[in-house]
Image (cartoon, rainbow, N blue to C red; front, side, top):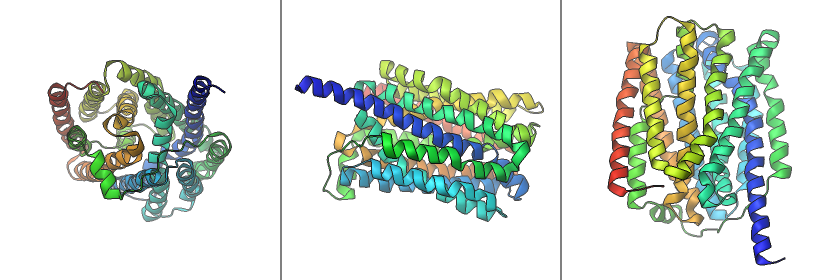
Length: 397
């Protein structure tokens, strides 16, 4: 086989790898989103938690998620392998999610949620590095956008399945049924996704981190941090839907609408970022989040308002998560991608804990409007900071 033919075959295999990983995420998201479409109201209404407790659960769970992303990101660079950690993470989440069916208090749900997010944390940095390894740098946005869109197809199917089976099996039955698509994801990952070997780094974690922390990367992380401390998660959009008068049985439809936006916009956002620059498109996602927060603060009294609000929030997620994941490798060496993702996820995890706690506390003590106003302020600061960053660095990454 000639060198050119070998490179062509490697490129084709890499693109197939991205697609197969997309199918793994699709099946996993069917499982996860069957649960998440009903979980916030299950925790608040059936298990008796307040909005502050919901914020605590989501904040700590996401912090654990990002903590394990750090460990797995550094480890994947250390050993030069991706797939074993990806498989471990998907396997853990698949096993623990159905255990929500046993929850009799919000404390029980908290433990299961944390374990599930730990599994997500273990798999995410190595999976992102595997996607990045499998795609040319010039097509990183397209690769991550394609993966995100396939992932979010499952995020639409999951809530719709929950909506269909909920009247028949109840919420706890939905939790049990979620294991079926999760098991299918494990089969695809185990037998069809191909390992890509990175260059194993023999340096310590701290030496790797010092190599990654260039001036521009540090500035970008600081800006992301400012925005993240006000970036509440999807649970509060579903809680807002309930306060607008959406019935519990229809909440999965609101969640499906949110995820529809991520499917529709994920791939176009990634391709646009490849064309015009990732940082400007990230600023656009922050602007969409600001508009979502304004709508959340102002809209009252009509259940139909929940659907455009959810679509707006899903649009923000589609753009920001696609672009942020695609831009991280631009700031580091190929053999340090995992460490770069680890540092990024550390920041996002800490910010998620702070933001959900503050947002939940404001919601509980001062009302939803005040909570959304807080996020309006932090997102506005993040947008201004990104614009200054673009002008000062003249980046098109």
